[in-house]
Length: 119
Image 1 (spheres, rainbow, N blue to C red):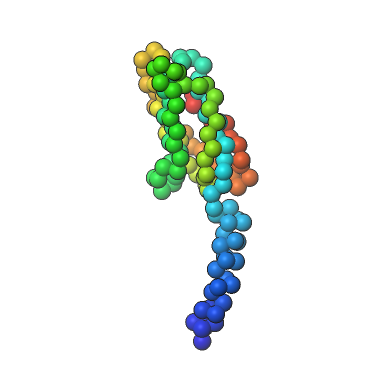
Image 2: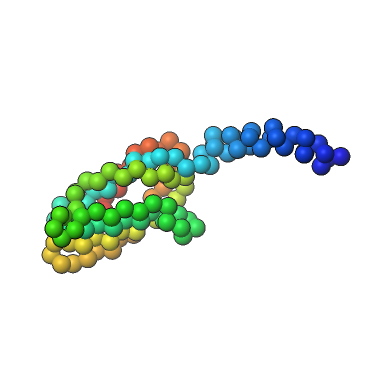
């Protein structure tokens, strides 16, 4: 009897539950991330990954080369669900050194733009 009741209501309940889940921030949202590199030493190449709590790469970007050094400010649009992330970055510098960075990033449902300093 309960099974019949649920089966009859499923076409109505499923979209309502999905809408409620999305409304409460369960889905991904577009976030404008601006990566800010240090002034000195100049960064020739930057590689950044945004990693979710499950270890999956949610977004990644790389820019710059030896011929065309990385821009100091770079905007990057990513679709991220609210929650905690880990930023993993590798910065190749003009002086020949490499710097590995790891930072925490938290996305709130109302976030639409975040500046991340990679220093």
